[in-house]
Image (cartoon, rainbow, N blue to C red):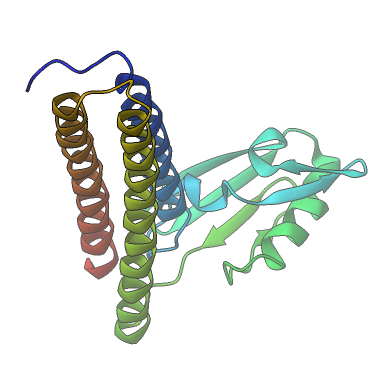
Length: 191
């Protein structure tokens, strides 16, 4: 690949940074989806009301996975146990914690075939939304590159090289989205 003009490189770097954030965000979103297997990241998005403020659950408790379908949540402060239990019960996870006075146990039920298919549709839609986001980042960078050519700070050859490099970066991040989707899809369909 030919070297890029110093004017075009920042546009590509900025677009790539946004694309990286999209890939990180989809991985976080997929990690919080319940697939019928216990994983500590399932509770990462939960906020607990603790002494009048909403804090992430992992700041007030330790989450462990003692068995394949069980999570244990041990609060650092026993006084937070009720608030943690409430946060889990009112979340969109559909889990019912068992409280033994010292910790919470969550049994993760297996997913039905119908629910698995719904989840696969959902993760495919999420992946497509992130692909669109990456394409939008590419479009924005392309507009900046074309404007630089119009302003005579880039030659036509430099513009073409920059567009080629930008497309290469875009393809790379779309591929990462697709790989992340394939892993999550396999995870959901695995019984």
